[in-house]
Amino acid sequence: MLRKLIKYEILADYKKYGVMFAAMLMVSFLLLFFDKMTSWVNNNTFVKLIFMVLSAVFGILVVLVCGMVLVFATNRFYKNLVRDEGYLMHTLPVPTWKLIVSKLIAVYIWSALAVVAVGICSGIAFGEPLWLFRMIEEFPEFIEESREVFGGKGFETFLINMIIMTVLSPAMIMVQIYFSLALGNLFNRHKLGMSVLMYFATYIGEQILSSIGMMFISSDMVKFVLESQNDSTIPDDKIFGFINETFVFTIIFSVVISVGYYIASERIFAKKLNLE
Image (cartoon, rainbow, N blue to C red):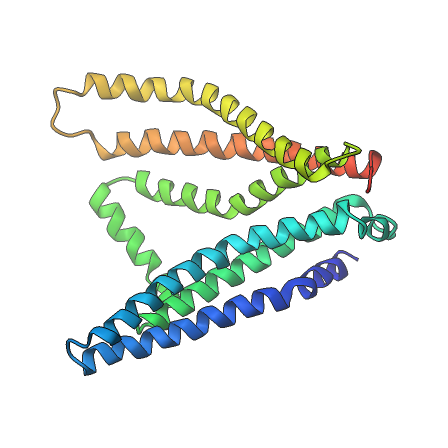
């Protein structure tokens, strides 16, 4: 049943994403064309102006494609589980956790497609359509070169932590939004407004807790920097060591908070459903 739910989620929004991907692809081809035109027609102000406008439009589309994944997913969750459609969705013979998980998986699918689409379109716009795949092939060589430059495995660990944080970020963002919508669902009036208020309240609370935890980690780093003021350089392994400690704390803290958000959201929708 989970597979059917995921398929349902994908089919529900594929037209919206298709339009945005198609628009970005069209602009990327236009950018490539006018880029060639600028080399063919020297000092043509009109061609250069069009190229600049298209570059700005392409940049806006890239931001929109990346941001719309979260916007579409949030709107989909709200309409599907909190508004009138919730009367149907919550009567399906599936547990609530599958409804939430199917939406999270759909977010990851669309996020991956958005990254690939942005990569391909950027490559087309700058005359290198396969740069993203070439970069993936050359990634091991990049790791080896970075290890030689920075020494040790600190930089490699830093990249691994960055990748982990990047992969987990969509789920962390969405479960916080889901939790906020679940809290807003408990109110009889102004559900959407209360959901927004709950989001900011949870965000502020999360930042306060994170800052308290970071104080204990950053104290050692501040002490080391103060003791190293007389040195012209700070060892790279020490720098990456402190950065990696910060990343590890951030990852663990975010995962724990996100699991809490998910469990609370599932329990609220399963036991305290209060549809409009």
